[in-house]
Structures are given as structure tokens and as C-alpha cells.
Image 1: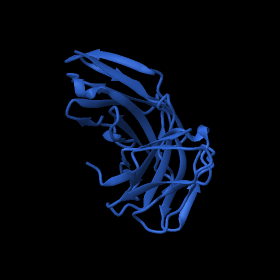
Image 2: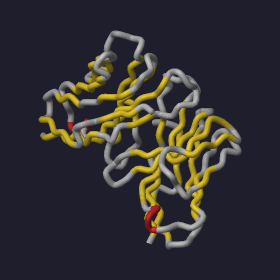
Image 3: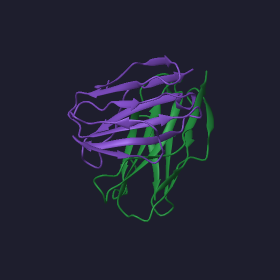
Image 4: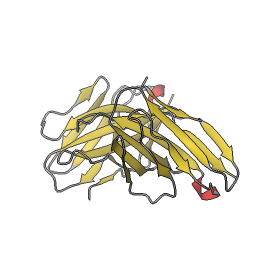
Length: 116
Length: 113
């Protein structure tokens, strides 16, 4: 079974600075999808960024980018120019591409605080 | 804003009561999920469905049950609530495509006293 590990339960960053959240995963599959989700306090969980394993190019969405290292099974999220609104729980997630009926596998999450 | 809704947002109920947490989505998604979120914020999959009349149990053993009679509706029922059921419950849905993101509801915070 696949597992996702987020080794940083909590992180903090100064406003306008850059922070990197770590995620590693364990799988024997070669084709899969990786996601970062954000859950602000008392608000809905939303997708931040998505990466297809077959793509070598790292995904980027505005201030959010990933460092996808397939051989190392690592998928870190970099947040540039951090803003107060970035404070949230961040979850890394994995989905197999080999079965149409595979739910997302989530890590335990990283709580990010942004200091003004 | 995702078109997936959970009601109620907050519920305080006595031990032994039967409760149903509602989840509806207007996006026509075949896949729907229920997650239990513990106080440490970890997500545990308790039920999922890949279409009408299809339901499966997730990784976390749960005393709850679900039904999927209509595509847009995926209610979760506890026949007899206990204090151990106190938690945040999140509903989600997604398209069938593997690369599709999951959309989450705002959650129901359940307290059993």
C-alpha cells in the first residue's frame, strides 16, 4: 500500500519570505498523481497544486511551486512571498494511476503559521 | 467556491441518538468520499463511492453507514452516537479522471455528549 509522509508537523515563516514543506511517499508504481491541498482554519480544503509523475517539469501555480524528485520519491511544496492568508494546514496526497477506483492517500499534514 | 455542501456545520447530540450527516454536490461527480479528521488534523477515509449503488469502507473502521441512491447525494448515518464519534467529518467528490482534484465540503463538526 502507498504511504505519504509529512515529517514537519508545524512550520512557520515570516511574511514575504519563502518556506518549503516536505513530503515523501512510498510506492512501487511508476505512474501516479501527487497533490498539495490547503485547509485554512474553519474553511474548505482546496487544491493548491498538482503534479503528474510522468512529467519531469515541476508544476507551478503563481507563488506555489513543487520540487518533484521521482527517484527520491519526494514532493516538496515551496511557497514564495508568503502572505498571512497562506496560514493553514497543508496536506500532501497521492493517487495511483493504475486503478480507476483508488482514493487519495493523504499525509498527516503540516500546520503553517505566517508571522507578520 | 466548490459546489459541495455539508449540513449541518455543527451538531451537538446526546449519546444513543441516530444522526445523519448530509453531503450534496451539484457537479455531477461520480466519486464521493467521507473523511474523519482527528484533533491532530489527520484525515482518515471512512467511506467512499464510485457511483450510484456503489459504496466501500475506507481504511478507518467506522460504525457509520452510507448510501448512494442519487449521484449528487451521499449521506452518512450513525445509528447510535457515542462520545467516541466526536470529530470533524469532511465530505469530498471528484470526477472519474485519475488526475481530477477532489473538492471538499466545509465539514460537519460533531460533538456527542
